[in-house]
Image (cartoon, rainbow, N blue to C red; front, side, top):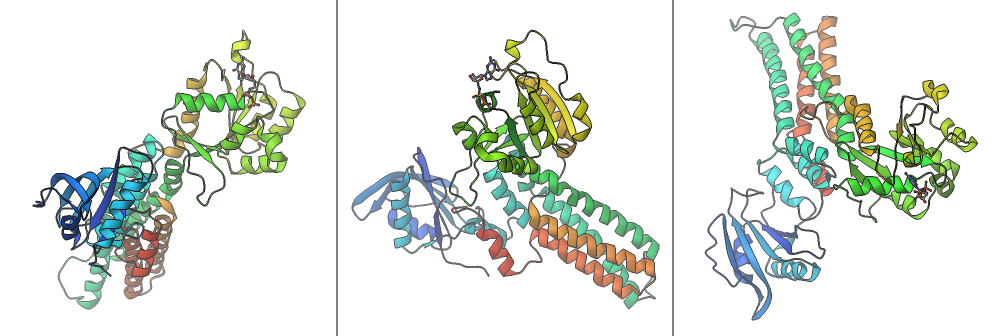
Length: 453
Ligand code: GDP
């Protein structure tokens, strides 16, 4: 499965920037760098050389060349990183030079795949690399960083080890019943298995939290025209520095703005909101319904006592987490009394907040209210969470196999059957760290990574 050819890729975004990095990894990385570099070519490991990238006599760019020889590198192979000037022409020219000199263009995620295949990281860490690159907020970065250190992989390894202990126990008691090693009896195996199952289920339950942390709380702002929705959006975007807008043109056709309020908020379709004042009017009632139905939080804005249209919007919010925002508090002397108390029962969660999108009054309190509403969903920041459907599916399968093993014991069936199910659980857990996955599945996982990583 391991390819020894030398790969090259652009590791930075090809946009106008101070620095761009072309990365090489493989047996010929250092030779290729020697071909195209004019500076000191001693290339001792973990040094940086200054010079020019050259194409024959022509200078392509001024560059710093970092050398990380195997195995102390990202991929565990010889790695060269050429720091040249940013912008697309420079990095492309340098990349092309490396290709002309014998490198092959790296596939998406191939550097990280080599780190995985060479055993430096497990699959949970490889996936954490992608999560940290994709992180939009401080919280998503922090949780991905914890996985990057291998915490999840360690926990999975611990659970596998315990299952293996049970398998060994059963097998030796079958093969050498006279062996005087201390066997666990079936009751003890059941108790231990139950503990492992609970730990697997706890991890499994973190999937939703992991998704929220990574993707943000899907939030939509609705309300009649001119109540101040766009103003609120702008106020939130201006007050919170960590804002990233998804690059359009990917598979999604909706654009999201991410707002970091301590928790990540993903504000849906705000490009549209910028263009038009009114989400209800612009999207039509059906689209609004759709946006509300997928939203995890609805910010329902009014600017005074409810009007007939407000009651119509309210009807669409049954079962949702709703915060009624009474905007334009700067125009009122008194805070607004609760407006929709008669409808309170119909919501999953409900709060009302007086705000002014123009002066910013009440926005901090609003953010605190949102944080409080979702605290239970996010859990403690340092809790271990899994990432993505792949990890969740493997945990579900592992739990099912372990559950089956425990059931077999309860039914009083033979110990061989218990062992078979335990081994299946062991293998499913191994899918999370990548130990029990086939080459094709590994290839597919890494193909979803970004280029140059
Ligand atoms: P949208 O149609 O709901 O997006 O409303 P806009 O954000 O476009 O705001 C409509 C009008 O209300 C604009 O003239 C805003 O300046 C004004 N507005 C919005 N928020 C406030 C506020 O908190 N106080 C005051 N006084 N005016 C506001």
